[in-house]
Length: 74
Image 1 (cartoon, rainbow, N blue to C red):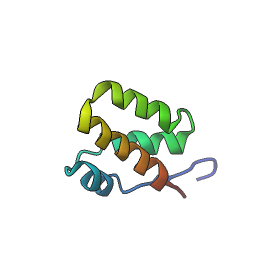
Image 2 (image 1 turned 90 degrees about the horizontal axis):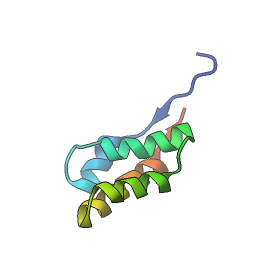
Image 3 (image 1 turned 30 degrees about the vertical axis):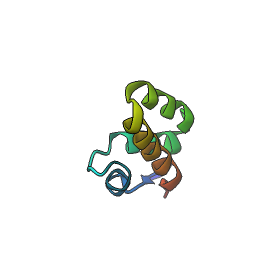
Image 4 (image 1 turned 135 degrees about the vertical axis):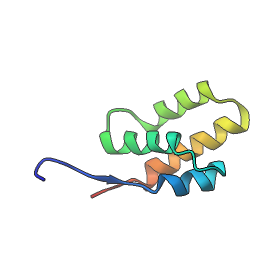
């Protein structure tokens, strides 16, 4: 498919490793930031920190960062 890109990330593994649950929402936000280039992972992390508090914020920011770093463009 000309002009299309595919981004790959194991969001379920990232969620299990960082959150201890198969909740992929924040990991997918990190992958979206990497694949699209529309937002930085830092701006996503700031938004996550506003929504979650304490350890929940730390874990979800880690999920965002890990997904951003592990997203592969194919």
